[in-house]
Length: 178
Image (cartoon, rainbow, N blue to C red; front, side, top):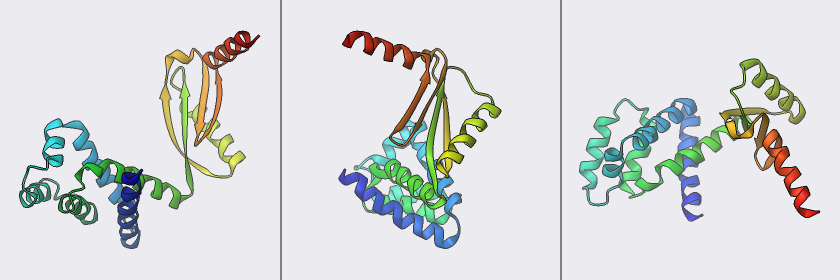
């Protein structure tokens, strides 16, 4: 929890700078690009997080390697190096995403189905939910064949399970209590 609180502070500061500059989307994309590089290459991740590597050397290498990033994103990464907070990069990006989504007034929505939904099917589900809740959504779609059929919708702490696997689980629970 303390790391999340600290990450939220960093993310808030970065978000405010990006907002003032009118670059919230560009900074968000660059921060994600940096975190994606860390996730994709174990050597880069190890170098970036290593407490043994000289800070000045690390700053120089990162500044050169990521010179194409927006200056706000790049300076955020360099600040993490200077403050020895390299291990918080992913959490800061997650907190930035939350702030950006809140600023747009959107909510996260996860749609999980047994098979890939067509664009029309997904749009119909999202449109009905948007009308019912009077909000916009950031939609994440996933496929889980173990659901057998139907759709499971997760919105924050609310979940609507219209899957066959969910119904079978419900029947099993009812039978086990009787």
